[in-house]
Image (cartoon, rainbow, N blue to C red; front, side):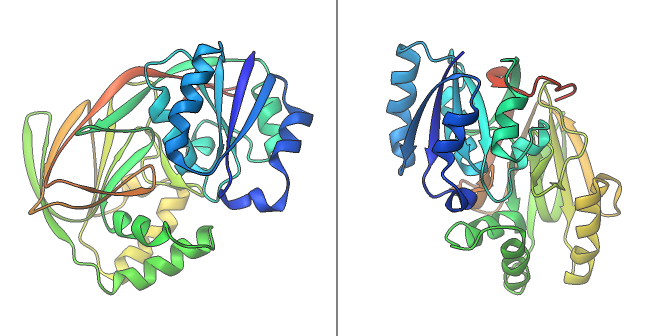
Length: 292
């Protein structure tokens, strides 16, 4: 299998080892490795790869790198591969990929490719989870941080809580409209943010629907009580948390504001139209993968 590895030069754990050396030593594929300093350069890399008959394009980095690579591969011939060297690696964890690079490569050595769903909010594609509310504020705070990892998320979360105000939302799902003052609204194609923080434990990449998770307005104490359930995979059963399943929905808020797509901060309009795009991306998965 012919493979291109696009290495994010800024990704979290890369400084601990030369990932290029690991790829060349452990890859079971016919591998070419390219370093990438700017996400704008990914388009040309993928165009060239497709022309050259590359069968899988690896995103070498964290969830941001996976997001930028995946959205450019939707509907195209090459499959997405993932070599996780980021801080959270939520999507890699969802598909059961080992987090040690050499083991991750070995796990996919059989070249098993599945077609999976992606999603779009207005004109913006995403792969795993998008969100508005408190998690969007955290993504905005986390993005410029030079120190990655779960500790930074927690630290920024506590600081951000002091200035966060829950907003009123109108959510139309399956023909019904509900109004909520929400702490978080997450729309999940895959199950987690990263670091095993599972916002939608029952989400599937192949079921043709999205899991909409609404967390009601919460005090700091209440939010802290939800944290253990987030990591235990039981938040969908917590008081004040509603999960809906749908192929499309509309969210209205009072004006444009922050959001995140796969953890990447963006600003989106007041009205958000979100829909699943079934079986729109080819994904290289571990040989032993079962339910995605």
